[in-house]
Image (cartoon, rainbow, N blue to C red; front, side, top):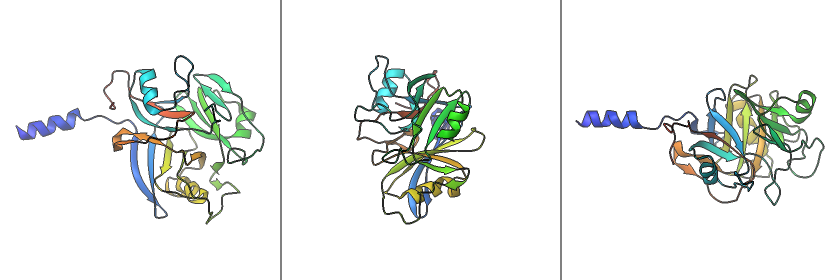
Length: 246
């Protein structure tokens, strides 16, 4: 009976479509979540059904009526939590592309755009996006572009003194695999950028934010709290409810 009960417990355990884990890079701790866009319901979230800013991971689940398998903040925003740069949700552009240099990390060119298409998701440099204008169903612009074609951003230098909790996303060249990462301790831009290039083997990576970085990963029992957020990215559990948890 004990063996049967144990077997039943294994079979009844949630099946996680998103693979989240803790890893170490240059002696520093990170949590990463790998997503396969062809298999996972990857979306961006900003407003509820009434047009109000969602702001929290729990609000996404309440608004959609579905569990999240993973989520994190996904781009910089103003005091009213409206996105600073390009933001597209369900094919509708709420904010236009900002192509010019400006203050802060966002305006530290080159910056980039995280684009989700039907079955694909990837990081693209903002100028390349404007030249091609891919049909993104969801998109969020942020900056700086940490890694482009395997090359680090020119302003990303070793031993940088600015150290914060940071989060971002990296993609392969095909758009078939994306990995989201958040540091579990303050790190500089160089160490965070080389996490994507050297440890995760991803040639393109985009910085989302620092200090306000937050992660929802129920697979790891993690639900960060704190700042109200603007744009968020996440994977929704299947509609039949067989995956994920409350």
